Length: 198
Image (tube, rainbow, N blue to C red):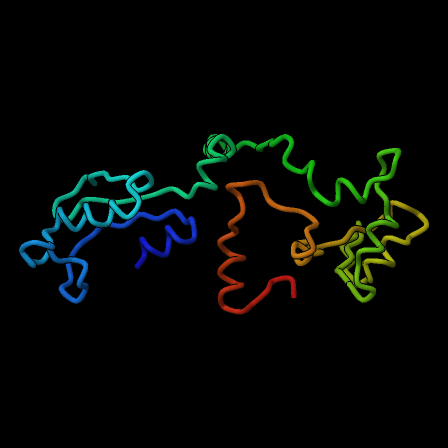
């Protein structure tokens, strides 16, 4: 079931097959009607997608064959992931170029002179959208984002703290680069029914 689900949804996976269960009618030899051997069971699983699923042997005794596949979305962006791993291992910042050029924000919230177009952003916002505002002294208050953008003394001396723009992803404002889509904490919070921008 793990293999089938992962293949159907283009997900990466790794499994170490252990037992062959007689409850599955597909796990019997077609000629002898005997239950598949462990090796044949591994072949059966790998043959579900022979061009995608790889096999390796782990360095311990017992059942040590691992079958795995890497999502095509990750394979397509292998360069980005490799760069990120190298930077993280060395505790260095990572600069990725040309990953935001298609963002709605880059096309619609920029004036002809290349400046930030506050009016264009304001037009996209809900009138009651608020966010925490933090001053240079550390004072915290709440403000409507449209009021923040309308400040005549731009840019303001305060800044928006934890304004959760990802809340608007559904409107196509921005997308994360391939290979960096998964935020495990955010995914888990969403799974348990808690949205951290609420």
